[in-house]
Image 1 (spheres, rainbow, N blue to C red):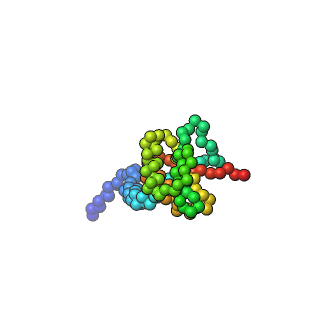
Image 2 (tube, rainbow, N blue to C red; image 1 turned 180 degrees about the vertical axis):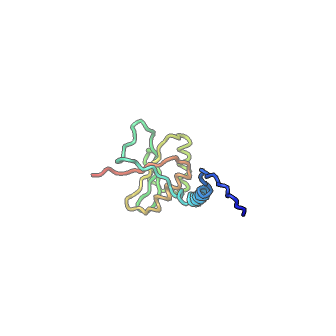
Image 3 (cartoon, helix red, strand yellow; image 1 turned 90 degrees about the horizontal axis):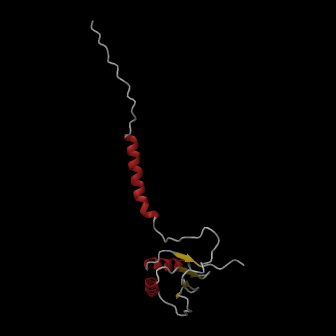
Length: 141
């Protein structure tokens, strides 16, 4: 009788990385699909502490306001009592920033105004090229 011996295989000390690559590709697809959903919205840089005063050496701020009725105003240091629509406000802000690009822009909203009116104002300011917007508050009493 003939018996044949099986060859012993050497043990391979390698890690099979194919399953890890599959998992990574699935995660990549998930992140690519969810990234556009996460980035929608209006960016607001909120202060990390209580409200701070603007530095005295800063430029005169552009104050975009919304009153309780939802009318929009732009104050550039001098008093303005006439309401403007959002397109006119955007043009005025672009003109002021063209002549003075370092001027801070601040949003002042009435406590009773609808949230949508403030968001529309901030979106208009963003479309007008304003890099960041501050929110005006009143000190606590």
